[in-house]
Length: 91
Image (tube, rainbow, N blue to C red; front, side, top):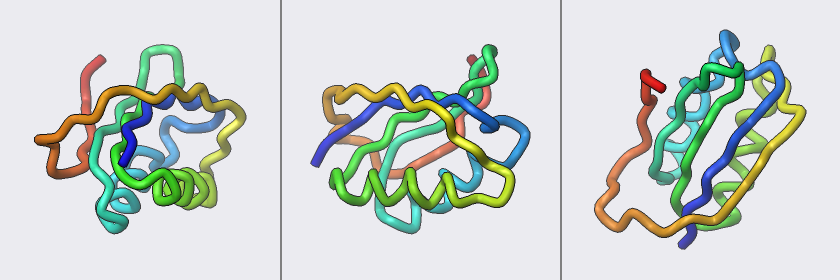
């Protein structure tokens, strides 16, 4: 079990990225959150099995209008009480 923080750039706002991430992560049993950032990027934290997190990124990037051209990743401490994956709306 790992938790990763991502800053994702590309065509990732206004194309359904957050909701695609939410439904895919929830369906895979992953927890965390996703939100748009002021600079046009998307920030996301995901917790679960490393292989599932990698599959999540592939599934998100296969969206019709989504195009990821950069991902900054770092491993961060687990959130043991977290139970779901949700969309955050504020910076």
